[in-house]
Length: 469
Image 1 (cartoon, rainbow, N blue to C red):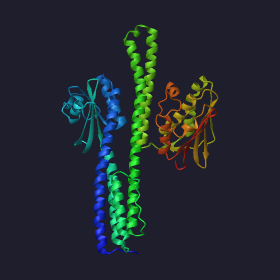
Image 2 (cartoon, helix red, strand yellow; image 1 turned 180 degrees about the vertical axis):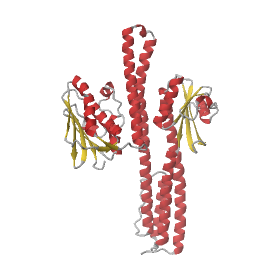
Image 3 (cartoon, one colour; image 1 turned 180 degrees about the horizontal axis):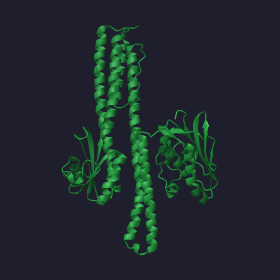
Image 4 (tube, rainbow, N blue to C red; image 1 turned 60 degrees about the vertical axis):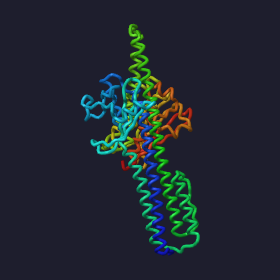
């Protein structure tokens, strides 16, 4: 075993700790600052989107902020232009009991800012943690404020901190234990490490430290490369999460805005005098109701998906008769299939006494979405629902003879709000979240969903529940 002298080990250990501390301070500060900036940016988008969604009616407004708070896990407060609170999502604080908010830093920032936004970081004694507040000065003579916990930022920052601390301790321990002979190449190796550390500190996580010595300096280089790789991976994951969140906010805004705009247009037309014509009034009210139903469907699916993704809600697992559930669901769609001239049939080879251990509500939700899609998007032919046991695993297949899904869309079909035929999907009233819900239902049951589809021949979705379920 190669060893370094005690004196050189202590010097190297001191230098290494100083370098790690310097890197720790730089990365820690930059990471937290960047994460906070991203949260503020995301909340600005959410605040403006919320303003589009929120009603101007005081009763409906309170219901809207409560719904948005549940959906986004944030606190929403709406104030009039004088700072008086008119709606509050926190059930522990009634609007009429709250102080005037005009002098709050985020409200003053929104008043002073050219873009109408203001933000502040404050410690909440109610929640015992720091919150970020973002306020938006609306053109509707009101302020919309969102408060969000910083626990997400703190969790990422602490994760990076622990990685740096653990790697620093392990590296120093290795230097104190392993002491190989030093040569003139040691200085060269340390110089390479310092140079690379500076680049990593500057954000170049692709920088690889090249040290050829087979000793502690080489081990140190490998450790730093590993740390850089882990930091790069964590940051990439964080960016991916941020991209998913931004896409979700943008897509949700678009999906919600479309029916809301339609409803507003119909109501404005009626208010302009069209309500005098009974036939026109009935037609517009029917279209308004259709958009309300679609809006309700989107919100309900978003809430279901949010619960599935959080996975912090308890599953109601129990044994139930999956065969009876399949019969009931296919029976419910017989009339819709008949009106389209489709042959909807159910085949099952599972034993009559077979029961499935799962959450009946979630399983029914997944099956409902698959059968509903199959009937909606199949113009002629048949829809077949089948169930069988394959090596003790339950396989449920929903197959149709529709148009099929193009190969380039198949890997994205389970993404939230992704549509193959956007125009037709909205025309049929889909929320764009059905298949995403199916995927998450199977994931929380440790199962999987498979897709086979061919253009012009139809699609085949298979739900596989493992034997242990």
